[in-house]
Length: 438
Ligand SMILES: Cc1cc2nc3c(=O)[nH]c(=O)nc-3n(C[C@H](O)[C@H](O)[C@H](O)COP(=O)(O)OP(=O)(O)OC[C@H]3O[C@@H](n4cnc5c(N)ncnc54)[C@H](O)[C@@H]3O)c2cc1C
Image 1: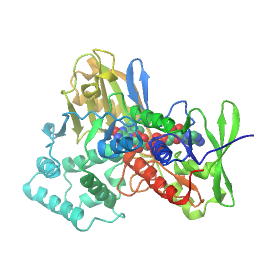
Image 2 (image 1 turned 180 degrees about the horizontal axis):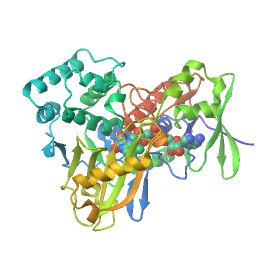
Image 3 (image 1 turned 30 degrees about the horizontal axis):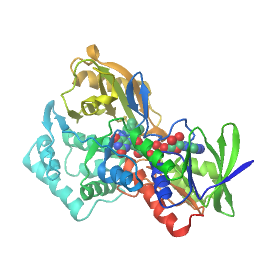
Image 4 (image 1 turned 135 degrees about the vertical axis):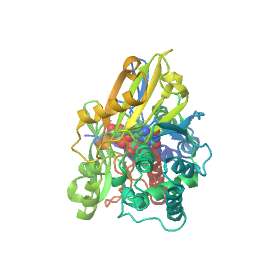
């Protein structure tokens, strides 16, 4: 078998994999990324569909997370921050969310509460959870909220925000994790924006940066097996152009998901405790529908958040911020929805019917003017996250020199692509203390 030597081998070119590979390349490690699909990026890629730029996943980015990474590794980053107004539909009425960071929650809870006393009771509990004692991980967010209110509009608002950030239901999220996430966002003062070419622009830029620093990125090349000797990772066997190649590396960073990593290295090498945690990791599913229309259907520059719909929690017209994403004169809109439960088995047909019913109820002229491009119930490893928030795994595996990165390995309180970026950063911090570039 042909043999090649690199300092570092990264399996998978998702945002976690490309974060680690770009930072390692910058630190002087000769790095190879192997990706099994014919394109790079995983859930951070964009495909052309009859002239429309549709994302496989990621739609919004932040300057403090993605922008900072790109600047650090010399990758282009062009984030478009719009004047988007987030509008919450509560009891059929639209309430714009205040723009300033502080006081947003108080104002929105005030709109949904049936009395001032109800709003004050909940706000006091939230303030204490943020500033004093957060609730434990053994309570769900739903159980925690219901101590203070059973108002469906308030529960719906929390569900709406949770669905956007982590896809799962209030009853499925550990309450403690919710407040950790809120604190992380509070600390970063996060500003969200869009990439004019779609989410894939981010990983494409990182791939170019990796190559420009001497690293290699191979697409269409699956890792077949992670190789080990005496409990230490030594590299992988990779399929390239019909032949198997043995890649030797000082360390292996796997972005394929913890369960797949176990499969690639061999289940027998992992202690039962690690396997138990790895197999509790379950994808956070989300339905995404893209549709096009010739005339505006959604209030210009608005993101509409539904608090009491069947499934849809958010929809907007992508081309308001990024007209480049559709052929001239066409609008591209997207809607996102949670599922009845985030645990399989899923009634895929029923879920899609609920989404369409919500869109018909809320967008005047939807049936007449909207043409559906794609509807996808993203799930398992293609879900919003590869794991539910609050159930992530550490980046170090029990096998020496084998790390995992991705949104299933982020630190507590970090969700979605920022979690994947953080996992990549943590791995590189550890690598530079243990290994030297050859
Ligand atoms: C519909 C949707 C919308 C989203 N919107 C946002 C958003 O707006 N903002 C945000 O921050 N996040 C968003 N996310 C989440 C975000 O996309 C993910 O958190 C992030 O992209 C996960 O990256 P990852 O590092 O876990 O890698 P993944 O995307 O999981 O990529 C892993 C890669 O490993 C490859 N691989 C697997 N096995 C092998 C093998 N044997 N050999 C080689 N390669 C292999 C896969 O093909 C894949 O490319 C969204 C997700 C979805 C699905």
